[in-house]
Image (cartoon, each protein chain N blue to C red):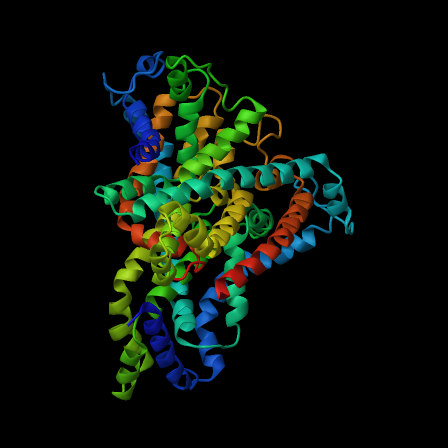
Length: 305
Length: 262
């Protein structure tokens, strides 16, 4: 019995027991979610509603009173070069980290999937960075990249190459953030790709072999197209994570030099808690959520396929 | 393959090595990639700091409480989602979970800070724990939905035919069977709580200064003490490095939040 037949068999039994599942009234089932709703209400729903309200006022932590100002905060943001800088930085970091993590994650997944000797040890060491405290990861790399005594520059000089001021220069600071983010998160891409590789249907692979396709041809014309949905999911998650990226940037560069690494999260933090412009920060939060909504729809669609 | 493994492990190795070195060794040029002399001075310095010990205990407290809240609320929600088809509020609940997962923490932190200050709840570890629990609820629910769906519904049905109450079914059938899954979920959520940085940075000051915030203080001070910084970073990551190995298999499912079916 093939895997697909097995799946349709379980689906059939699932169908046959649907009536028993529906026996209880829907309100009873809804009670299961009550504690969850309570938690979301207190920490997410009420604050977000408040955030929306604040974004239409001129509040700041510096003045106790505020008035309704309509869309002023939004228009001020959308005409501010700082805002567009943060959008540009976010897109740049997303694009660069995808360009590194997607191919690298795929290659590592292919290597692990071949199950050569030592694969388990290899996989374990690759997974190590993934769950480390991002703040600690930032510190580790500050230690290694700093221009006075960093080991990275030390090794470069040993090899006769010039030392680089990794965190002090606009271009190299962006590259450093992307490299550190990739160091921590490529293993995640690898895990998803590996899950994708391991659930590939046997049929097309078999057909490719029978038709005498080379390994390269098989990867290019059979495996990669079949992995496209997983790739889409990876791209979505990594874009979302690039918008969320905060801890590593805060430690490595704090958005600097200048605004070179100030993505939307760091910009929002600075607006709210450095410049104390609460209403503008809230407006930026609303804009970020609106920008995320198309991602949400894509996610749902990818999930339902 | 070896190159990739070395790249993954070298920063961890280098941080540990630096944490055991004297200032002179740390500033040696060219850098010495291995070998002593070693010293425990950096660790002595960090461990003697009263704020480190306070931060360690508040981080443990917040992590334990937050994990307990997330697991408790998550378990009910996960059971409902895994066992019933469509019911009132299910779709919006799932939509909110995805939004919480996708939304940058700062979007929430700006208004949440206002609420918490207005209510006089600023700098309280319990409030941090509730906030962590809400943020990590999506992971907890999605992991547990997977585990509960893996248990044959017939088991519950036959128990019900034998006259068991819903409570007994939960206690005698579901809980023992999902115990390994619950353990993995616990470790996973606890790791995420342990790592949380933005919420304590924004919602707390001294009393709620967790380890990540304490450790981050090493770079914001004017002169960086690299030895002590490496020691503090090592102390923060050692427990995680060990636990990561324990939850490897659950990583994908939790992180991708149901994005890849397995």
